[in-house]
Length: 355
Ligand SMILES: *Cc1c(COP(=O)(O)O)cnc(C)c1O
Image (tube, rainbow, N blue to C red; front, side):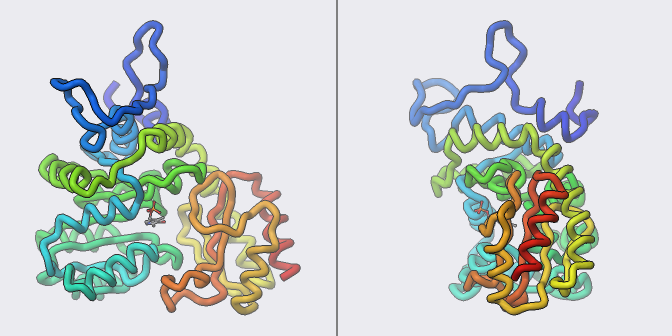
């Protein structure tokens, strides 16, 4: 059966499996080797590892990519992607987004490594007006943590008309909601740490693409920087991907329901939910201290950063000095997990009411 005819739930389970051979394990083993007998396809553990390939194949299948490279973290993947741009290249990027990406781009801009034109990625006119003469467009949509949504197919199309490269951070939407390569993006990036791995136990990143020449350049970057994925983390991430579509469907359904319930809660002033995904951001009636009390006041939902695990977490994003000043001080970002909706709502309602 060809991959194209399979659904994501099936691809997540069947990709990256060894052939059906009598007596062989149905999972590939973890390859803990720094070096390999000369003459084979892999010589050294920084250039290759048998545990990467099945994980890369599974992400490729989900993103409709030709190939994927896994990295030691999402930020390592992003850094490898930007490393391909020539010194001083003009690029267009969202002014709201993952704080690690924002601080990296600001540093590149200050150092003259890149000339970054920061835009409101949800303002299509503004994005298009900045594309002229730029080499690269970096998109994150929905944005973290404001949950703004870009007109993805339009802005990618406009960038491609101008022969620009396009990179896309698809961590929040996941390939279950959008596949940027099918809109013409060149590179799709994931913090595999989040929904794909899904159990808050690994840090990993990935880049997926269709162009073999681009793959070769990014693979070179991975080898040179040594930003490689650990075999154990890679194995755990693939194990996580087996249930990713199930986990994500459940979390997304609960997130939509919680967004509605939050919107009619008297302690909540504003709810941001783009209509898909499992992240909900909301502002409360009180100040920063009250928002901290809410985050500390739940027993199921953990006050913790990061997202995409089976367990629900939330945090006041402005507790991070790197977070954009445009994000309100009393904004709480909730990562909805897979607990029962009624239990989650009871917990959230209690935390909101007693704060
Ligand atoms: C977490 C995150 C990253 C960074 O990934 P790491 O695995 O933590 O390095 C990048 N983009 C988004 C949207 C994220 O949520």
